[in-house]
Image 1 (cartoon, helix red, strand yellow):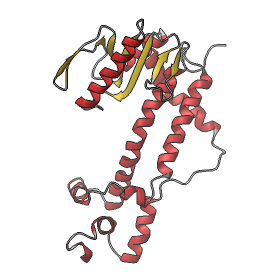
Image 2 (cartoon, one colour; image 1 turned 30 degrees about the horizontal axis):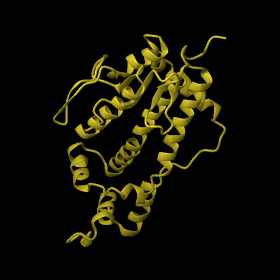
Image 3 (cartoon, one colour; image 1 turned 90 degrees about the vertical axis):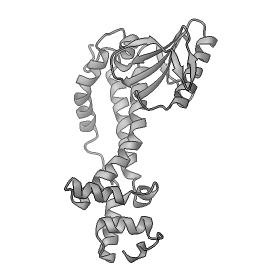
Image 4 (cartoon, one colour; image 1 turned 180 degrees about the horizontal axis):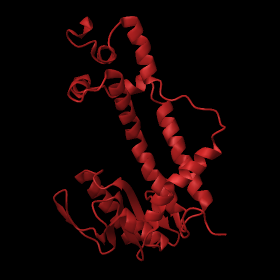
Length: 254
C-alpha cells in the first residue's frame, strides 16, 4: 500500500516522530513556572525599551518573553525530530548517545546534525571536525558529515579550511545542507520538500488522534506573577523587576 505522507519513511514512523516532538512542546510549556522563568534572570531594562519602543502592553510583552524561553528549549527538540525522521530511513539508524546522530547500518556513513548553520562557535566546530575525522579514520570506508538542516545554500562539499587558527582537512569529512542530506539518505532529490509539504497533514492527523485526551496545563509563570501583582499593586513589569532585582540598591522601593 502506498504511503499517505512521504515515500521514504513509513506513515507510522512519521506520526511517531511528530508525537515525540509534541511531547517535547508540552513538557516545555508545563515546565515554565515562575521559578524557571526567573532562573536566567529577566532583563527588565530591555523589556521596558521593548514595551515603549514597540508599543506593546506589559502582559503581551511578558507572554512573548515566556514564549521565547519555551522556544529556546524547543530548538534542540527540532534537531532531534530530524534525527528521528532520518533514522527511520531503511539502512540508517539514530545514534542513541553513541557520539553520532545518524549512522549507516553498514558503517559507511556517520553524521552530526545541527538544526542551524550558525549554532557552533570555533571551539565547537574544531571539536566536531576532530570527532568526524576520528570516525573516518576508524571506519575506512565511511564518509562523515556535518549536517546543517537550515543552511545558507544547498551544498555538499569537503569540510576543509581554517578552524580556530588551525588548518583542517580530511578526504572523507564533509559538510552538507539539510536538503542534500535528506536526498543522500533517501535516494530522493526532493525528500526534504516532501517532508515540508506533508507536515501540516501529519500534524493535523496526529492532533486529531489525541483530541479526546485530557488537556494539559500550560505554563503557569504569568498566572503566578499576576497573582503577586494583585497583592503588591505593582505593574507586571515592576513585579518581575522586584522579584529579580529587589536586592539591588534602591530596588526595594518598587
